[in-house]
Image 1: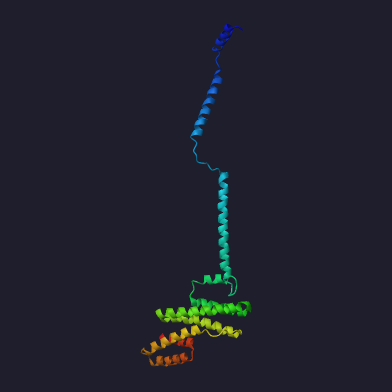
Image 2: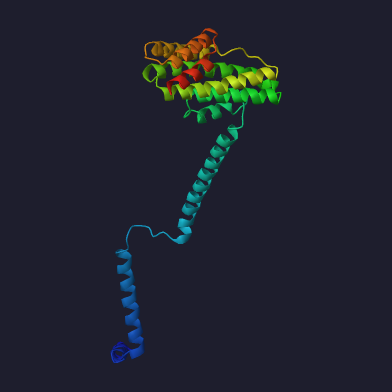
Length: 240
């Protein structure tokens, strides 16, 4: 083929036109490609979390909730079980923590109750610890009573003290009948003696009827016999 013939054939290609369907398809593909490029360009940098990606986070939080609930249950169980422990037991210090809202005199009564139960159940391994705890609590109670009565020595306060002390002394008498004598609670006796002496002095300065004067003589005799609880009972009667 000569050069002229080749040029003539190329000119005839200009007259060839593509089909309309093909042209539309090509145009659509070009526009879609351009739109995709624009979409990629404006895509936010933040990561879109899928449900599957968030699931481990929820699972971790769920484990934390279970762990906290288990810990709470464990702590409550310890404090609950500690209420049944005795001096010398492993969890007894926990029981003492729960008693911090009580008065020292109430705590002393609790220790006297522990002692009675230990003697009844013959828990000899707990006896020495129980006696020590009881005596310590009585000393603390006596100090507190003395301090409080200096500030407030009214009849109602004396009634409360006398009632609690009498319960402790009753437990001591029960211990003796069970064959264990831990001695007298001298600290509490000293406190009661102080209260009785102050009340006797106050009554002596008051104007009394003949009947009250006779009662005061009996109170003084009880005081001299060191029967302080009985003397206090008579003082409360004479004061009514």
